Amino acid sequence: MKWLDRIPLLWLVLIAAWLAVAPVAPEPHLVEKLRMLSQGNLQKPIDIFDLLLHSVPLCLLVARLVRMWLHRERGTQQR
Image (cartoon, rainbow, N blue to C red; front, side, top):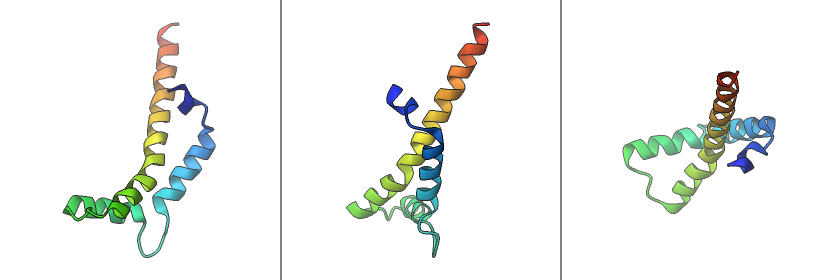
């Protein structure tokens, strides 16, 4: 998972935020696809791809932040 640590955090935050809200009107794709998933209507391959496209950067950001937190916790425990 060292490849994840090499991604600049600022870029990861910007890409995750941009894809989470794009397009802004009438509603973000991520919200629309999550609603479709909860209703059981997420069946078309393009909709599944769209959900992955808009959610993967957020998942990577969360993973990166968790890794940073765990690394910091390990550093404080060793002292």
